[in-house]
Length: 151
Image (cartoon, rainbow, N blue to C red; front, side, top):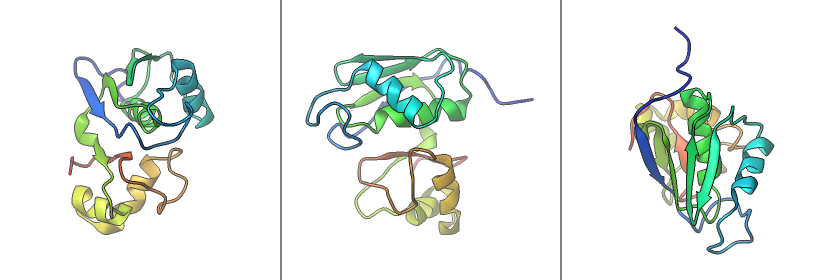
């Protein structure tokens, strides 16, 4: 059977580093608006497929829509890795994400989560278009781990 179009039941709360990420709202503690986040998702070439993005303070909620699990995870990362966003609430498996720590490389993350440093390109590919180069990651950034486990 094809990809799951809607994950029911598991609402996860994903924590992000509020003071790191792409600055869209002027920097500091300012949270971006829902419209700004929808534009960011679109600018990355992602489609929300009807999912609603709401902002309340520094918390973002992504709900509904006809997204596959992978598409939903990418939308979570696109909005969560924005300066001013502390949490994203959405239906997704928390074990599919890894928060980059100081000194991390994609190879080290791949070894820790996928069992082999040589699988770093799988993580890079799973995080396109948010990542433009395998060496351009930063502490606090959350990444998708395809078929991996939380490290």
